[in-house]
Length: 372
Ligand SMILES: Cc1ncc(COP(=O)(O)O)c(C=O)c1O
Image (tube, rainbow, N blue to C red; front, side, top):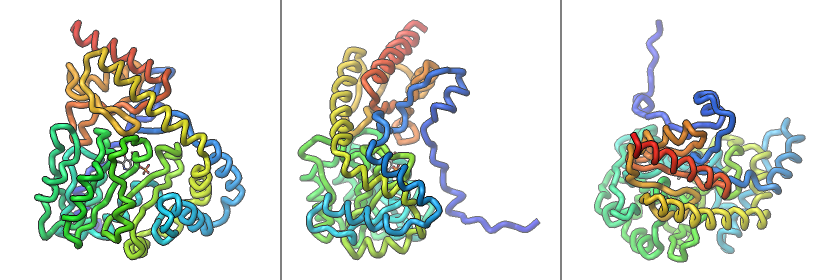
């Protein structure tokens, strides 16, 4: 038999573990009704304007996408900054594809990425895929990216720094004042990536926003997504923001027609859906507060979040077993072990009804554990 020549980098790549689907859980546990609060999806469903635009575009399914990629970039750019043009924006097949493009563009054999020890696992997975090594810096005691420690971890091999703000799974943000100081001190040869997939949910006026650094002409790239606030996770649209030179270079890593017009037109339409955007952010703000109250009443520790999920930390039982027990009662939540926090459980905020169902299930799981 022919000896296959395998890519040694790929052999080291751990497979990404996605949250369980409703269908999987229904089948596995013989349940009729399951609530999904495990993948940070939008509980309102998709933006209605996006659905309308996608449906219209279906009659164009026989054509390769062309026009709509440029149209989305043109429409997005001024919403980010009045000085931006489509040359500052690049679209991809979800935010993950943007992270892939940036890593592909800047990581080489022997290069290093610095990120946090408890964050979105794709930063490390992509680094390995492209032959690099990931340096994981622990979070601060209040579960935030430790920027001074990241600065100290920079070596001549550092190519990329991934900051996730709000961070998945902790929901904590990088503050503007600390980010200002940080980007000033990072050597110019290093690219700083701000993963801002959840930034739309943050209401903290102190939050960092990478657009400012892009405007300053720095080697900063933001990765953003239509999956969360626009409710389009299934359509796979993400985008990068960067200075013109970087965006132009990133185009070299892009597959032709990487996102279809159905998705691109839906994403463009969602930008006009102010009513949906307002309802999304309002729901998350209200439900965060509601869930905090419920967790307080259960005497559980959690991290205050600027995203559409809340991380319960150090529960009074094994976190993985707790997730399993909650799952058996029909609610999908996420064990944060694969995100570097084995003693924590991440809960995506749902509608009021879903959150109440979660709290009822959680209460009974904790009572059963106490009684055992
Ligand atoms: C921090 C972070 N970045 C990026 C993504 C990718 O999102 P998508 O590829 O759906 O845009 C996710 C998805 O959950 C995420 O949590």
